[in-house]
Length: 439
Image 1 (tube, helix red, strand yellow):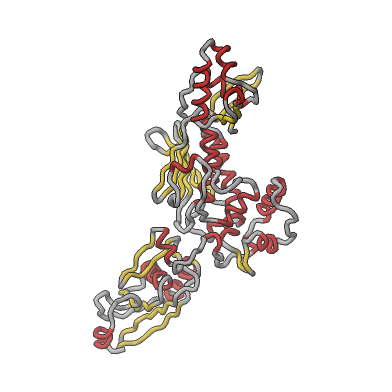
Image 2: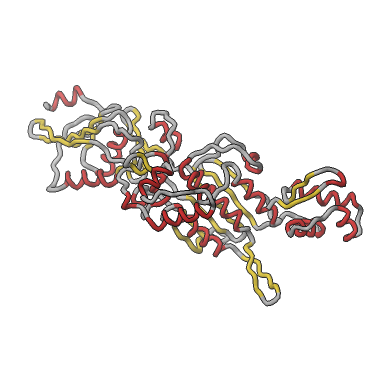
């Protein structure tokens, strides 16, 4: 490989990269970019402008580098290394083959090649394009290197018990591999990402950024407490819920000799929001699900935009753009969710039934919901009506009019406002009208 020929005939392009030295992370990122594309070659020992400088590696340096790439790139990259001579100079040539499974990640990030530049892929839509525009669900892709021994049998048996109690799983397979195949979490001998996310002992061994991050903050956004829950999804949802509910301010009530603590934000609303975040998040985007507990609110964020819907649609039963069908199916079987498109409706209902303001949804790269302790302003009569209906009592506007010595028209207005707020539901017309709670 003569010096002049190298400088004249070679240049950096879509499939060729020059590196002056073996900077491990820099070279590995270029390898991932080539693997996510059509492949390519990296010449180590050549400057960006094509000048040969050569390379001299210490003992074990190349082996250390190749081990690092094998350990930190997922799925594994197919590549070979060789040394080529140019006079007295030696050049390391790394030949990278296009990956059969894309995208490839290095330390939790994907990279792509654009002309002669290696770029980090941060947008989930770009990540999907690395699948050649096929409709691919992250939770349906095989998880490289995952074995049955990586799964937590205790969590699997707990899921079976939960699903059986819910009446949604009959005759579960005795063997774990048969059960996973029946549930669509295993294809042949390959465990899918969903199987690892739902049941693994240590999912973070396969997904570099993983889990639910919970933080308690002051009104000035100073962190007062923080905890990560990075077990499998069945574990982390329950553990994160316990943490959140332990930090949500409580209202103290005394009934007889009993002291009762009532969360100022209903647990049902928080659980629906958290499960919704985990089930619908975009796993192509390496990030935590975030739960922030403030002085008077709980906010839950997950990576991924709201797709195919407007925020106004979330207050009613709606169609759902499914990002993770396998996770959704398992969550349905163990009754974490009831039906696609109903979770946000239950959040609205739980907040309204407790006299609280509607949830505040927002969507960008992250989808978020904020649940506040601020109340809907109900008058005394409306609070009485709501409490009576939630207790299962039959109550009509004439009853309220007599109790509070007001006109029937004013009482009808109280019922109408509760219906508009979604706190009660009306059936029938005129004297045949009946009202029931949406709980």
